[in-house]
Length: 402
Image (tube, rainbow, N blue to C red; front, side):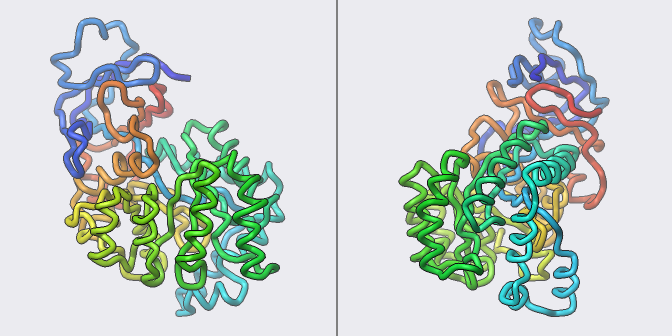
């Protein structure tokens, strides 16, 4: 439930108020006033307007406060795990070979189809709970581990239930076009994904996504799926250029998708097209880290003027990561982003990737989602990877821990 609150004792407040990539709008010795779950005022503690003096105080003891993290790409609802596959990759077996042999996504599909709705919800609630404790307040959740109409619907309904049973906000995405179901032919499956399955899933989703890459779907197939999704009110987003350069980033620009995600093999041509079309680049450093693959060219994309977001890609096979602080550290240490750029991308960038204009910053009228760090500065996020640095979370003005 939303609360009226006055957060005091903030040693360092990141507001993202300039709303310009990488500019954090820092305020020292700050306070934040919250009314009805929205930021009513933010600024120097010495200048708190008199009218906010009656709000319930929450003193954070000199700690740093940042906007709640917005995780713009996850596969949060699934059953089973793929620890054995992880060990196979460490022994040198390529992911494409694992997928072709019935492993990878297909093994998760088998487990997810067999799981009950209650089991999927319970597992999703546990993962979402861990995300919230690490400062994530909004998460995108994809389907894609059903590959049949019944299970795809069940995943999206489970994602909605996770959003109702935890404090986290869930943004649902239809990913029927993850890979081709093993029991169908390619054309038959595309007809299902753009027909019966889409009709059943569209009311439960905000976006339509396609894994457009080597071993998955071609650019022409992805265009077909995404245009069908658009006709039913779902904005496109794309898994693009992860395993090879496929042309998916240019397709994302052509369709003015909300985002193009992964982009490990993106080129300057792709960057120019994404910038011109206003497509957000959602980068997933934990996936490349887990696959021991080269990271996406974050520095090139950022310098080219593309709006960059960071996300966990939480999934059972290639990035079983739930921590946005860890992703921030990877973005700095392995992708070449600065701490300021990485934090902006994990907050405001993620909000823009999900069409959530009132999130990812601490300004008047914004949703009052905050992460209180057990540290004096946001710089400790990349400086101390693996540390439990989130001391408390404020969601819609309610203090969840602390």
